[in-house]
Length: 558
Image 1 (cartoon, rainbow, N blue to C red):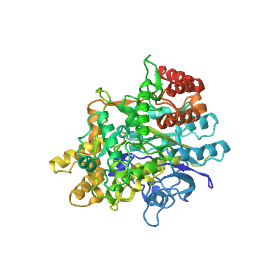
Image 2: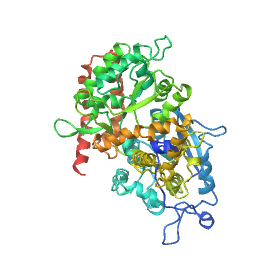
Image 3: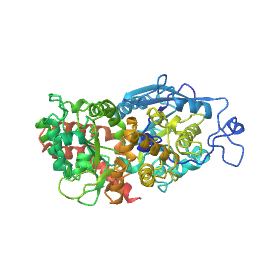
Image 4: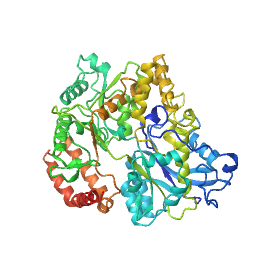
């Protein structure tokens, strides 16, 4: 790739990897580590009819500049950073790729998106970087992206190819424009997205409360946790259910009311696809949250706190009940357990507000896309980075303690640049580990599963830093809830998984801002709950109606 350019990478997280291998990664790889002879061969061109080695080393090395989102939950060993860690060292040593971060954003995805939007507007783009669907559409229309069709065909490793094409090519199709592959989808472990309820059992027992079976039970527990001093410090410093200014931690609350968030496209009463956040059920969820806020059960500062801050509050014992994904015992709960050994959490399925089974929402298996700026000299370098990540997490030369999660508990997998993923990896790992624990026989486990299995045994032997493994992959772990959803068909999957439509590219950010501001005002009581109806009308007039038409036109062509 051209030197002195920026390039972005965001580490998306899926739980198994995070837990046992790398939270948000992949599965066993078939591509071998390059031999000394192949590693010394430049791969920018091939004179052979056979495909080039997908992991061949550049000689001399090339520099690939990058920019990164650094989540506030990232932890580094002494001397390590997002610029210097096992992944960057591996890229240089084994691929001959010097990954150099030109800029970083420490914070949240919206903050990264905002900074990248400035780069897009100015034309000062990185060599390769991660984009959301709207940004991808904008860059395609501006003709600023390199065609990756040949790079993918020539260099993708067998296992990475298996992951990308497991859905019949749907993910790759969403990144294809005019017959050209202009982005590489970043896949996530699909079932991991469905919300799960987490409850502090030590607080529940202290207040002599029953386990939640209905959403009304959840609200009663939340009220008790907010008003009855469950931590016993004599201070009014605990709250009920948390949400953030960006409405993280809100999905499970909405799902309990059979409501879904704005990225969920579901059939409305007319049978057409429409986003979940404009449906009547959302109004019911917001009305109940407004009641909670009015009664003092919610953090009055939720409207200014991001995901990292609220996660820290959960770990600090400010909340004892919340909805999140199955990785929550790893982040943020393990750090809370480390500080307070008496802290004990249990996971539950989403309770329903009305007795009708609640479905956990599932977005597309595409978390984001990685692209290459048009004109870059070695676009195949991105494919090699993906191959390397897949190999080191799931391949025959997998090295989980170096690249995933070491014995010290540091989550190294978060630093990786780009990746492919087995979309059912984590729930399948839970099933395999559960059986191995029951039979006391780990002989059939994959390397990453065996690592989680071993760490569960370490926890049971007294090593408390692996409490998270027991609570994620153990018999009563969070993936047991995901398994329950899957077996009982309790997922609600989005029905739109294409690239951003033209109006999305133009209007989505302003529509999202309108939604965030309106919902926040409703919950805080500065707007009436009936403002929801006005919001829906305005959302449609300001571009939403056009987006609905475009999405339904897309659906007709599938």
